[in-house]
Image 1 (cartoon, helix red, strand yellow):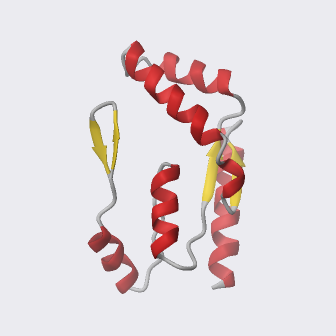
Image 2 (cartoon, rainbow, N blue to C red):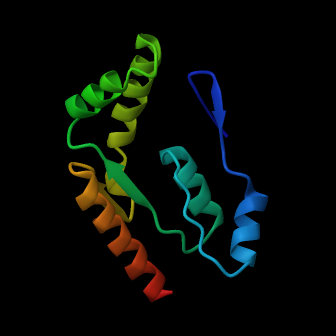
Length: 117
């Protein structure tokens, strides 16, 4: 469980179990701490870090959305700066410089990893 800007985020283990028990793979969108936690308890987990092209571009995107207060954006940016330093710890890194290209790359990684299992 992670707290960001006073909000609690997490993934229910029983939901993951339900999906896997049905013979399906499970794709989770997590922050770095959550990805590490899942990988620690689920052998065979494949991790993919989706990276902004630069910190300044990430900041521009957050401010342009205008969905959070300046304080919340500051918190998100501080967290993002720490997380960007962890990208090399992941199995794959996808640069989100162009959403269409990034989606194609993510699909390729998932298809390749599923074929290997």
